[in-house]
Length: 123
Image 1 (cartoon, rainbow, N blue to C red):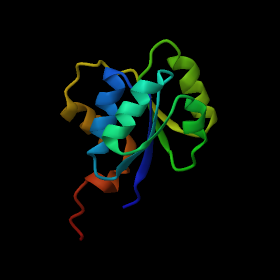
Image 2 (image 1 turned 45 degrees about the vertical axis):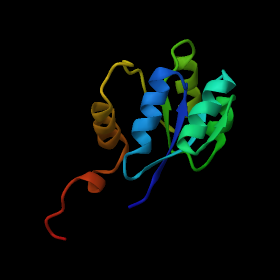
Image 3 (image 1 turned 90 degrees about the vertical axis):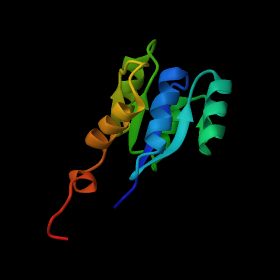
């Protein structure tokens, strides 16, 4: 199964929850995290063992990143438009109190191809 590279924009509570959940899903790989508050991006990147940037445009320019989880509200629409223009799939706008298991389910359902999580009885 091909691994899907994930970028996370916004590293506060909601972004941390999304990134941590994505990091545990087989078939997804968090490549880079970004936040305008560099200290938040650096902390999350260190915790996950991934790269970080304070300029989300650098994250969007990374060819390994195929999908972007956007967890920042002030400029979410602008970032989402930039992500689409960069050819990335966006996933955003989530309540910060949602359980990790629900986030994992949504990530699997929306980002991974059906063959990655449906049982194939012919194998």
